[in-house]
Length: 257
Image 1 (spheres, helix red, strand yellow):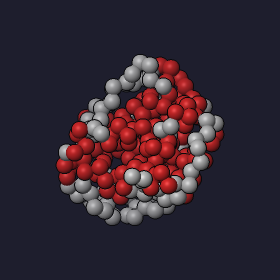
Image 2 (image 1 turned 30 degrees about the vertical axis):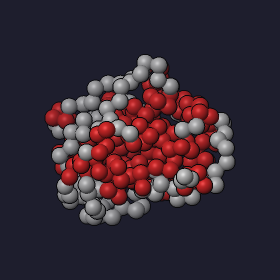
Image 3 (image 1 turned 90 degrees about the vertical axis):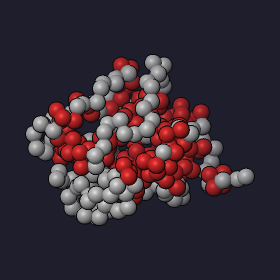
Image 4 (image 1 turned 90 degrees about the horizontal axis):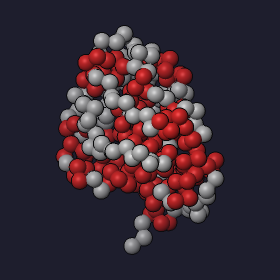
């Protein structure tokens, strides 16, 4: 049976790293779903192009060479950091939604022989909640699609590999991960994709070491523009963690609550 992914007006994958983002942009323009990018962007040629593209991001080559993988900071310690810092906002966000750093079901093992793209998969997984805070994304169903659209702009093939692995992970069938199952049907949001493309410096940033940085200045340094689609006080339907709560972020997406 043919899927919509089979029918996408997409030429055979090219191996040039500079074309990968353009191919991803073409998919976004076709209003594809997150699930539909998996067979397209996990072709060997595009994974090689992804490796080359990632190694061109300032700081990422060093991270990959070291396989830099520090422990996540303790939330209790982060809550004592100065008001307006990245770490304190992250701790407040996690408390607001009653999330723990190990909430995400797929805790990937870091292979010492990991390619740049597979190392990026590990980093994207581990830093998922950091991206929520840096990008001012709630945990609503709509914003889970938006934050993955943002990540698609950061590293298209790495996200496709993650989605492929998550789709067959046994924990994805648990009730509390309904939002993760649902994102495969979500259409990639163009605005968030563009934000991700502009913020690729995130991939080379040692985010766990930047917790004391003022959040607004860190966003600026990493190229994160404000969300033009931000709707104050409207968290939307929320199945993440099994409950709905008021939105965490203020009307101005770049402002710390």
